Length: 276
Image 1 (tube, rainbow, N blue to C red):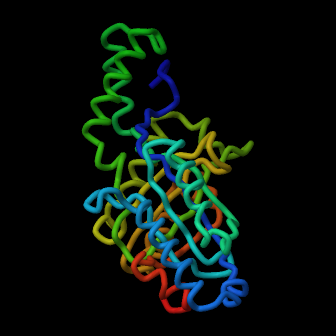
Image 2 (image 1 turned 90 degrees about the horizontal axis):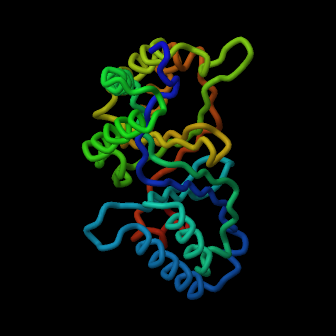
Image 3 (image 1 turned 90 degrees about the vertical axis):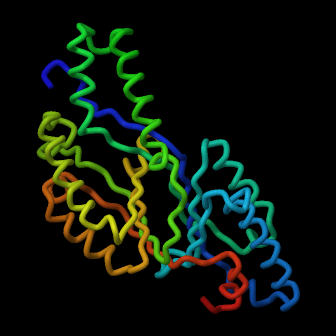
């Protein structure tokens, strides 16, 4: 890869917003039962409109009951643009239910597919045609390759939120220290490590759905990782095994972990009444 750009190619798809809320149970219990039912019904109706339109469309918004002290509710939104995500925030803020929510954390990112495996072939194909890196001809060749990849990977780039019981979300970085710096490692070595790292994830493909989103320039970490599964213990097993992998053991930094249990919107009233 000598003489080629050090940056691996990526494909981007849906924009993603995670919202983490604390619920004001004390203020909620002060409202009359009839008022709580009305507010809950209106809130569930607003969330159902966000969830999917029309009714047979893919799920684009999902609600989770968060465990632990970090918050009470997690909302995950997949949309086609940042403007659409911002519109979700604005619509949610118009509901009376929002008055009982305090947002304690959020995360903005975009679904990303890293192309370490194909980047080398794409660069070599462009070079074989005599194109200089970053020349107009080179850029056009790369763009055409990305367009072909985007068409083939569309279901992964614009996924529905998986219909699973549990969510685990965490942000992460690659180390950029003086002694250990991922971004100074030669491309071929990074490609090798990412391939080995990916092989671990593939072994869990039938148990966990993983969606990686890039957040460089959008939020405080470099990537956000969503894991969806019907068995929460598999989160521990997958992440633990990956930490023995070189790319995680040497080069990874992890942020806070958040875990939640899916709330079907038809059962939001139950949750508001203290029953999951």
